[in-house]
Image 1 (cartoon, one colour):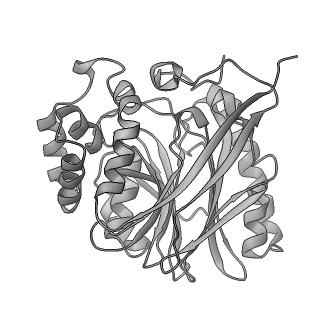
Image 2 (tube, rainbow, N blue to C red; image 1 turned 135 degrees about the horizontal axis):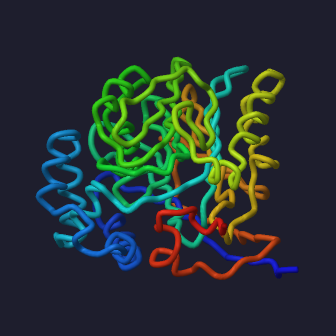
Length: 354
């Protein structure tokens, strides 16, 4: 029997109105690993600075001043500028379960299932442009999930399709939507024409309890659905081997059953995500639940949950703090601490060995 694998990890909450010294400090700390990942397949495999610049100008012109401020804070280098544009990045495969629950009050809850070896654990409250945003940041310019001060919440799960193509990394799109949309309708209009390089499900909820799930796939029109649940598959196209490894159908059916019961309060529903089959412990193989996020649009509150701890934030009361946790994979697995240059960005399942 394999020995359990343990990794000690620290989550941190940060606050900074505009891109400044705090953002710059974190970028400098993370950039060596991100640079290795970004250039994993070589210089020629990444788009040029000009391609990245033109793509941003064409599809997200409002974001240009924020991107330029990030590039300047990062030192103005060519590689950093291209990385922060997130145009045609290397492929990434993530897990995740997410659902909207509307009973006593609307809430969107998500589990982020991935590897702690390639995760930043940075929650930031910012006001980079038009509105305040609380988000779990990714690749420094993007967001894994979050909510803005108007009560719009956005969450992402991998769509379970093997094909990647031209387009932006999905976490930059999430950042863009949180910065420039106020409700679900505005998100749909903003996102419709922006190309994304892979398949993802974006689940949305706003302060008026409007919700939707957007099914996005490289090279295909975005599908707008009224689904309140998303795991790691889509109606059009699938990847059976991946779906089996991450048990996407099992998790989806479990969420359907919870939704049908209509007995949980909003906070009770969030607590269900800390239990199997939604909560996963395959941390060393890239499929462990790193955190559970619950966004309450009407109260503008963001809760982040773990089995033995909870963070609560809102836009008036956001404090910088740390939370130390030990992720334990009971089955064990070889160390992936250098996963940026190992298997996590290859064109196969990240760490989920075949």
